[in-house]
Image 1: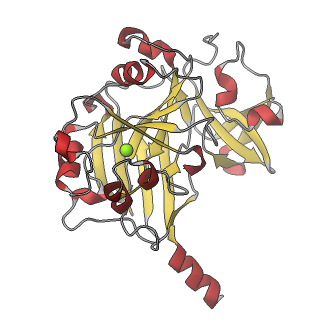
Image 2: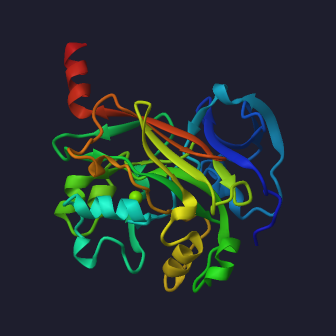
Length: 306
Ligand code: MG
């Protein structure tokens, strides 16, 4: 049973003094009303709220700056569903890149391309994206709107699909392009450790209009991606209907809906992420997800010098 107490809210998952907590962000974005939840529930992040009939009691109010944000769902219960090549211009830039193991089917897919990332890839806003040059030398960013499922189901019709959405967050679908190209299944290239920055917040489904919401990505303050979620080739209802046709969706499932044009692979020569780069994904109404890239080599050199 999903009730409506949480409409029009923006939630954060975080730790304070090491204890996992969940709360709602104030309108000015400065404070969090911390919910009174047992630790084992709070550690599930906003997933702990999804099936509640009533709002938890508020324990206290704290400033956002006094907590350490975690991803809204710090460790999803199962793989994150993802959609590939779901904006026209990106489908063309990726198809031309030479790394598209699905290119033979044409630049723009006839049906949604669905793949997944393992849950352990999830990191919070502010956490480091790890680049390991011994594994990949082609780490790329992908700004994406992500759907959080509220009501599970199988065989969900497109016209009912949004009733199954609890809310939205931001995902940066970090990708090792060389691994994505080498293996026809994308899972390895998409599931490297730290490759799913998520957050900073989750908003309920009424908080944004997914037919018209701006999405941007900056690398070191340079605008790389700028689009609108209204330009998805396969919209959210179609994606939910496609997956749930024979795969029962569960409350708390996360679906990353695809990235617009402007990823590193779209440039000639490609502009991959490197040590020290700051990647910032913005979706209006949700927030700003910033992560810094740290390469193993730089880390080892620092350790040796220190
Ligand atoms: Mg993607």
